[in-house]
Length: 148
Image 1 (cartoon, rainbow, N blue to C red):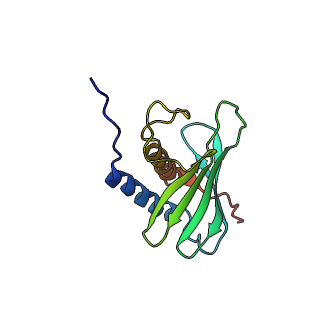
Image 2: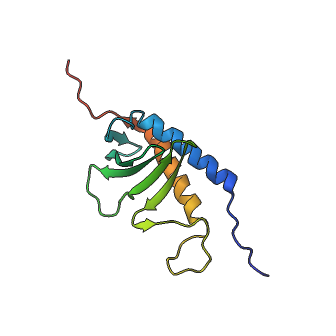
Image 3: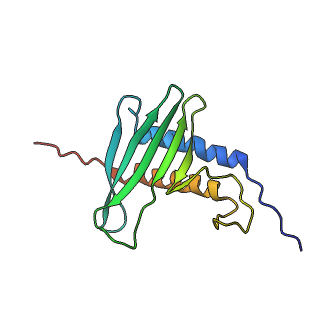
């Protein structure tokens, strides 16, 4: 039996990118005027993390962002990836352009390949970003101290 070639689902992929754009705006609503947004993140464990969204480049129709998550406790077996995202303001969508040190992620990879990428690597990475941003919206908190 011949193996079927992976065909990207562009409607689903674009819907995820559009949703990620809205999630990023919710987390960083003043990104056109500020350079950085930091907030705390606490999940189901006692470990806390700090999420940093940093503007790398700002153009009239696009914004490049870097999302980093750093854990309070430095545990070598838990390491968050660094993600770079390009937001397209004219079409209101956002896509991952770099995941860790992998740049120019393709929509489809032939299997097997030298980088050991999954056939749907780009879709998986954009879904991961969506899950991370959704978790940040649900469990994020301010790091600012309020004086009484």
